[in-house]
Length: 250
Ligand SMILES: NC(=O)c1ccc[n+]([C@@H]2O[C@H](COP(=O)([O-])OP(=O)(O)OC[C@H]3O[C@@H](n4cnc5c(N)ncnc54)[C@H](OP(=O)(O)O)[C@@H]3O)[C@@H](O)[C@H]2O)c1
Image (cartoon, rainbow, N blue to C red):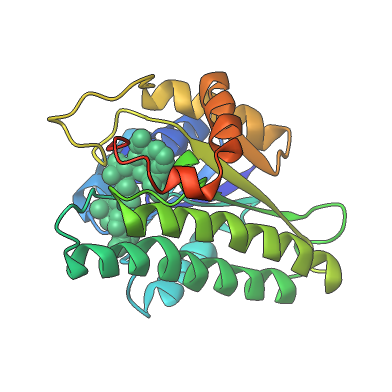
């Protein structure tokens, strides 16, 4: 990998992946709303290695900002969509639900579809050198979760959307491939600092799993093995029973 763009690289997993790639000599384009965090990343690795774009994925102009970033970085081998928000929503506050949909679902579609348009037009990609598009969804997309309805539903949507796109690019000969990254709990700002989370992983450990999975071009990357097992078991629970499980609050 020579060039990568990471949307949502100002904190957490996206930032850690961006730093790991930059350390390995990859030219990285990073985007997010917090400009000062982007500048910090650039200062750490230098202007040749890290290019920045202030971007709010919920706004229409995010696509122009992606174009500007691509023109600085060059055609990326990898586009990683790491932007995401997620809150428990016991009051079912509509603002939380709608913002979550706007960031996780609409933002992802906006940027991934725009990028695929670029891939179709660009002479940089072909059957031997496909653009790699990865999205950080979550194991939370496995089932609808009453504690965070929009979060779990948008994560499920991301996974289904990637599956649809994986079929789409084969139907229409678009030189792109996809990875759906589904972490368990990772210690980042998205988690509630007042809560305790089981099987919590550091962003550095999550990044190792992600980079290994991306290198192997895995379509679905779930980590770690305990969450793989949990996902398998979750899937076995019939809907009529799942919807009665009111104790799952994380
Ligand atoms: N941490 C976990 O336990 C966990 C588990 C499973 C899945 N995930 C997923 O991993 C992804 C990354 O989250 P994280 O854990 O690394 O949390 P994080 O530290 O809160 O990072 C979230 C990133 O999303 C960006 N973002 C949020 N809203 C945005 C917007 N409107 N426009 C552009 N960027 C936006 C943030 O940047 P700005 O605020 O600067 O814009 C930040 O860079 C999310 O999709 C999350 O659902 C996390």
